[in-house]
Image (cartoon, rainbow, N blue to C red; front, top):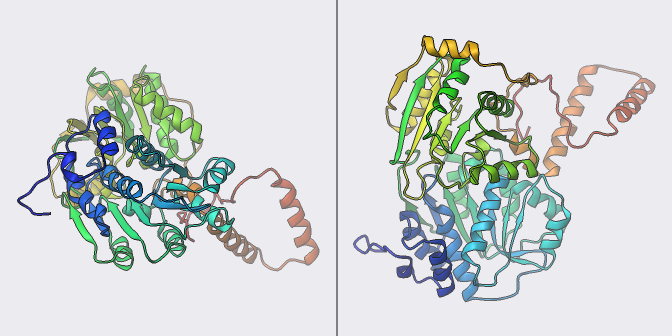
Length: 475
């Protein structure tokens, strides 16, 4: 596309009339920069390497031209397979992407299915049986379906890897390669991400053929419409400071981020103690609990949604007024994704980050990666906060954190394929047996029978809570 010819309307992109009708019904008339640059290339059949910060409209940038191409060349979907495959790192993002495909393609009569872990297999198997036009999937559950031979990817025409860098963060590099091995060589590949780490860049180099590179912002930049500030505060006074922020009626719909799951539960409970309606969302919540919390937040029934980084990307919630980072992330790029939950679709927003003394180095890394100095205010030794901290009741006691919590996103464990989980369990079991030393066969057999009896009701992979080594999904 010529630099002098800037497309300013969706009608300029050559999309099918049913797509334009759906976009009009959604209230969309102008494409975002990433959409204006990527859509023509996808429609022309080019491989795409797209880099754009979160909240810029990457989903529509690939969903609209994919729907256009599938509708222009109608054919039956392959049995147990799909024509277009989209890989997503989390359940929430997979659900959102599928909803976008359905919304944009509502007048086309194309079929869309979504596959992820944490829910029953049956409905997913039935959805795949007759084949679908578009399949949105998390890597782990898709590999499980492939191993059970209820899914077949040999008919995929278009392959999309969304949020590629988060895939890497969650340990999905090897599962992605396994999935790619099931795809036909003759296909179109689309990579979209907010950042492009070295390993994902190498994977893109291996899979993309003469790609069209589209980038609308430097890597790891923050949204220009987000007003950012850092508040220096003692760790023990963070709850009081958070409660103080909610005294401002402008804090109407607020996302609060923590590093750990139990931390999210504690913060949500502490907000409830001071009369702020809040819910938490993280990987230990069931799919139903997560969906209900998101629905209540979107409907305005609760003012605060407290989340781990599982919600930092892909949760497209309108009118999020503020993002509060109760704890700074260990990975500096996550800061960008967190604040990208506000100031979406042309709106403005505010991002507030708490920083205790032990988080100073994390803040330094964030400012280095984002190439900016974030305005800061010192609330340490604040007498009002000290008095408020003493007055706020402690929330119900939570179980102690597992060693290494917060350093690795354990939500990925639920989406890992069963084969990888089983391999990990066998290695851990073998290692444990080696540490126990030599025992008689009778003693070993008795112990094994006792272990089996004790764990008869156990569902899922074993995990040692006493281990001090951080969990890795591929160890």
